[in-house]
Length: 367
Ligand SMILES: NC(=O)c1ccc[n+]([C@@H]2O[C@H](COP(=O)([O-])OP(=O)(O)OC[C@H]3O[C@@H](n4cnc5c(N)ncnc54)[C@H](O)[C@@H]3O)[C@@H](O)[C@H]2O)c1
Image (cartoon, rainbow, N blue to C red; front, top):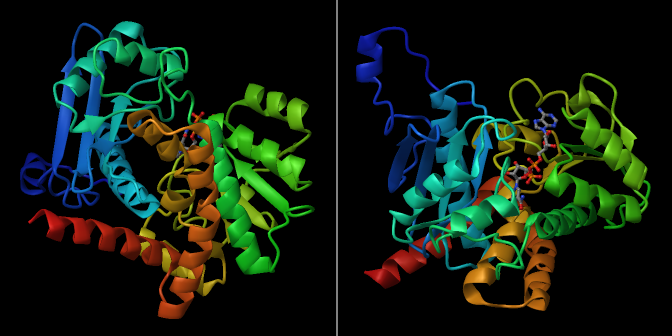
């Protein structure tokens, strides 16, 4: 986590606590939301609205401190800008974080209050679910604002986006396997899925159906037992997952698991997963993966199924179109790998350049 450590008041004053954050990257707006009655403490990051309103989910997490929460909002919202841009959606990038334990502190009143803050932005930011949020929470937010997606099908929404996200990750992983192993068949491949929540579980379903040897890891023991019982995956009982011999590592929990501690341990040939911001430092760790010959499928490219699904709520397109666009992640991922090889850059940078080119072209058109 790229947060700064301060020891004296002077340092705090001189370090520019918001615009000076390492994760601050030309964000347009950052909104701090506080409500004493419901205990809501939230940060909404709006990174870029050149292509359209900033759409991105809300994460509720028990952050160690406010710096971590702010940096998460900044990193995640920037990621959304590039995710929508590379997927060809007319959306900008935004994301919100709520500080707290979703299991014990989230209430409908808190969600409604959060919805009011979202509403106060008049559609510049549109929310959806992320870690710690459910479709029901989005239905609650919908009571006070139309600027929310990922609501239930009964309420006119496209429902939980996670299965579509998992399908897109599966497509991106297959493309990476094609590139690295010369076949996209995942049968008998040893695949570790770290985090078997909403997305991870459906990914495990696709992988076991295809006959992969799937290992699962999660901090939640109940989930592990549930997913093992359903799909016959093996629970990882060791203590250093990243160092295990495997074909594919699929990070599906929180971000930054590719970091200074793990980078030299990886024995996987491919990294392809759902988690946002998998590279703690996208340039440094992207480069080190490339040097080690590990094929990295850029997270914001292959986990775009969810945003495609919620975008359908805004544009009104149907299930077939959602699946077609999500399946297309396979082709785009292969294109990115080839472009990265041609230009001698990391896969992450190749994806970023394409996304930036689309934003810059629109910026020029708008002037
Ligand atoms: N839900 C979507 O449609 C979507 C879309 C794009 C990206 N993502 C990203 O994918 C990731 C997973 O999303 P989700 O909706 O499945 O979330 P989720 O909250 O349903 O699942 C996350 C899982 O990770 C586990 N976990 C947390 N910390 C862990 C750790 N240190 N080690 C192992 N497991 C750990 C949790 O116990 C939980 O089971 C997140 O990074 C999210 O931002 C999700």
